[in-house]
Image (cartoon, rainbow, N blue to C red; front, side, top):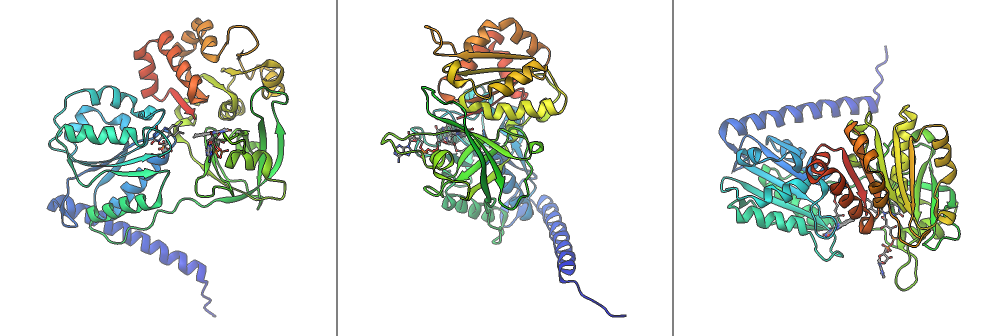
Length: 451
Ligand SMILES: Cc1cc2nc3c(=O)[nH]c(=O)nc-3n(C[C@H](O)[C@H](O)[C@H](O)COP(=O)(O)OP(=O)(O)OC[C@H]3O[C@@H](n4cnc5c(N)ncnc54)[C@H](O)[C@@H]3O)c2cc1C
Ligand SMILES: Cc1cc2nc3c(=O)[nH]c(=O)nc-3n(C[C@H](O)[C@H](O)[C@H](O)COP(=O)(O)O)c2cc1C
């Protein structure tokens, strides 16, 4: 009998054995670290917490990678959302690595609202705690890494000891992330932490591009259908984001809320064509809405946006609130629920003029007609003398809002941070009370994808 060697199968088997041995080694090192109280030369507690405060998932992703790197180095590490960090856990934890982004105008992300608003206002003694902060931000904002800085100052002010100085990451800058990885290797006593490569872009083509608001007083808004160049549609969930790397600014990808679900066979975006002060088009929106043709390659990758998925809310009534291009994320969520047979979907949507800005009018009308949308409330701000926005619709429908929330509804908000998201938040606080809004946020029943 002739023995044939299939290199792929052998390679796979060897890789499997290698992974298994690496896993055993990691578990053994973690156990030794715990029993000795030492790992890689530094005192190691039984548990390292990697706490993330994330809005769109970058900090969460880096926290998972951080915990995995520490675990590979033999430490007992686990990633946790900052919303789970209560005073008890804070008092018991010996080592915490914080990874946090900044939102709004120097604010904490939504998941950190309670921590920032309550716990950081209290006087805890944290002299038992060793910590480090990786602050994610964007230096084009006035309050660069505002929440990371505030958290760092608060921890130090409460007596906690930094393991090393805060590292600020400007728009995912690789050098800052490499510095963080270097510090992790030092903590874990390893010199071989694998590089964290960002997921690769795929090549896509524009299959269709339609202007949704001809004649609008606002900037043009397009519905784009994109198809993968190799024909294989990747998997995503309603709520996820697409990152586009534009030729004019390839190192700074732009995020777009995905408007379709995979069952529709195409990836759709709603993109507003931005214009810069000098009249030139925005780097990414200009490329997607005007610059790129059918034959051009669009470099795009999908980013799981855990916080904006339906997840545990899939079975709850949905209140979807938004404006402008924010309809993208809301449409995907509503479509996913319709496909799953849910009809208790309520959309509150705002734009400028009914005549030009009633986006996806036919589809929404059809959904309403066949009962897939239980309610559709529209606010066209410029169709009457006094401006009317989605937050006004909420006030008009206060009874209905309270009834839906009492019935277990989840609230999803997508669109402009300026004006809309703040106005909606204030209306919710006014109508439901601060306590209930805080509870909805903490329970993941109030989620936002605002920009
Ligand atoms: C989570 C998330 C989801 C999003 N979803 C959507 C969506 O579904 N649809 C959508 O349309 N957008 C969405 N956005 C916004 C989108 O990511 C981009 O920010 C937007 O398209 C503008 O990018 P751009 O490259 O076209 O413009 P840029 O080139 O970045 O310019 C944008 C603005 O910045 C200023 N600017 C930047 N550079 C200059 C310069 N050199 N000179 C002068 N001014 C400058 C101008 O005011 C300009 O209007 C989302 C953003 C986030 C964070
Ligand atoms: C609407 C919006 C507001 C932001 N505000 C700030 C800010 O005030 N200061 C800052 O440094 N970064 C700001 N950022 C940048 C984010 O902190 C940065 O993109 C971060 O990597 C996001 O991480 P996350 O995905 O974990 O939320 C803002 C980003 C967005 C989209």
